Amino acid sequence: MAGHDLDPLFDRLSRSQFRSRFALSDKDRAYAASRGRAEVNAHAEDFIRARLAPAEPANDGKQTPMRGHPAFVAQHATATCCRGCLMKWHGIEKGRPLDEREIAYVVAVLDRWIVSQMSSGQR
Image (cartoon, rainbow, N blue to C red; front, side, top):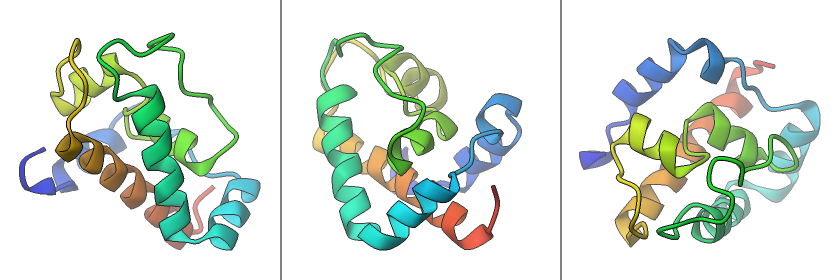
């Protein structure tokens, strides 16, 4: 997490069969394009604060929908969907609230994945 050099993380994610199968749908792409990066990131931050940041999130492990917003798909693709994945992939321990730096980090990870999806034409 230090320094937000996300290249090593995205390299590891690309080697995961499960994580690399996620892609934005046409509907998600259209939504992201119409709302813009700043608004999508603001939504992502709201979702992280409500569903991931608490020390003991409600329904942890099942709190992130698989569809319905580009940030939800991005959370599954980047292993920021639950506190277990956050610990395994990002080294952020469970059992305590996320701090502001960690919330900003998760939003940066989601932003990078969504931007890469929007620019790649990948589906």
